[in-house]
Amino acid sequence: MATPKTFHVKSFGCQMNVYDGERMAEAMAASGYASVASERDADVVVLNTCHIREKATEKVYSDIGRLRKGKPNQMIAVAGCVAQAEGAEIVRRAKVDVVVGPQAYHNLPRLVADAARGAPALDTNMPLLSKFGALPARRRVGPSAFLTVQEGCDKFCTYCVVPYTRGAEVSRPFDAIVEEARALVGAGAQEITLLGQNVNAWSDGDRDLGALIRVLDRVPGLSRIRYTTSHPNDMTEGLIDAHRDVESLMPFLHLPVQSGNDRILRAMNRSHTRDSYLRIIDRVRAARPDIALSGDFIVGFPGETEAEFADTLSLVDEVAHASAFSFKYSPRAGTPAATMPDQIAPEVMTERLARLQERLARDQAAFNRATVGKRCEVLVERTGKLPGQMLGKSPWLQSVLLENGPPVGTLVEVEITAAGPNSLTGVPALSAAA
Ligand code: SAH
Ligand code: SF4
Ligand code: F3S
Image (cartoon, rainbow, N blue to C red; front, side, top):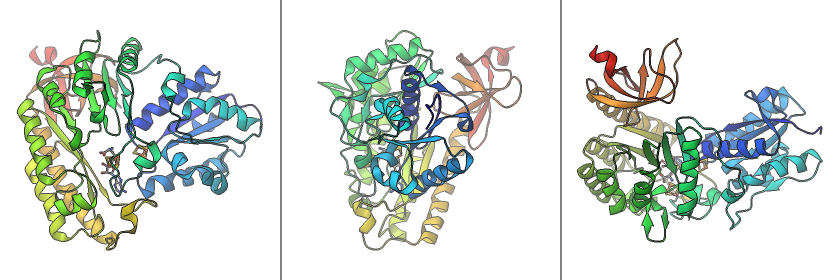
């Protein structure tokens, strides 16, 4: 194979994969490879993959097939959670050139060079020494940036592959995070979203995530802080207090619940109950009354009866989430739930998902409508489709469309003038007053 010169990274799955994809691109650039915008022009395509549901994994194999047909000599590197889960199996099954896991991608440039000389190029190690120390510093980012502070999961929900693909829970050290946050602000970020599979399990000594947020709040130039994804059991008093006290901590909490039924939650090994979830929501709302709540839901977990599913619907009614993600249960090889009896028929799952999504959409539309007429700050993140249109985010993570909006990177006071199911329209407050 000729020595590759250009690369393109394509990330699937969660926000942590987006972050990892950026850092892989930075590592490749630091080793002399040039990033290209289209996968067609790339000598190396890096597929940064997700293994969470069957569809996500299948997508990888169909993508590899498509790439192979398009440009036979292109090098294909598989990174991310499918790389970790399948390892050498992907090389056998799909003849890819490089396989690199989520804890080993600082080695991607070397693996690409190895593959170019025909040497085996597979690294799915989970080294004790963190990849972060081996990655180049952040250089240029948009107004809203991700920062991984915690990785891995020790919770072992019975349906989930993440503890196997990402490894054990590890918190990055406090100093390294503060340093990266400063670097991100220097590179253009005004908003930072702290990432972790269980981000609120982050700790360093006696500091919890709430304490970290209080320190980041004082980083000059950093206007907004967010974090995701949290687990109900790691929702500390300190973090809830931060929602009351820290102005730059945005009023938004993504707190997956999965089901509203205690028997199902036990079978999922969620280690929280319906009631303990609802009590956390009460405490968070007491601390920050305008907080927007979000959640994840799974329908059709093995053995879920209609009555048990109805408990999920009633929990939704009780909480009124501002947004949510909901999924059909997908059996994953190697997880305990995959071999549980009473797997639910696909058509039952489809029907339950439709009923759940109808309620979630109702609550999201109501939440969006309630912001009409309010004023809030919007961080402008990108240009819209038509000339003059700009897109940004409200404090509650809603997309806001501004006609004749200010440039990318502006934090602007906006009056919300209209709401749709998935976004808002606003007018900069100065022109609204004029
Ligand atoms: N660590 C996070 C995110 C995990 S993956 C958390 O615990 O919340 C994101 C979501 O995918 C989960 O919250 C869950 O709703 C969904 N999910 C995970 N495994 C799944 C499976 N096997 N089938 C369907 N949905 C799944
Ligand atoms: Fe998966 Fe559960 Fe861990 Fe979330 S907490 S990553 S759902 S095992
Ligand atoms: Fe997918 Fe791995 Fe994220 S399985 S959701 S990319 S942690």
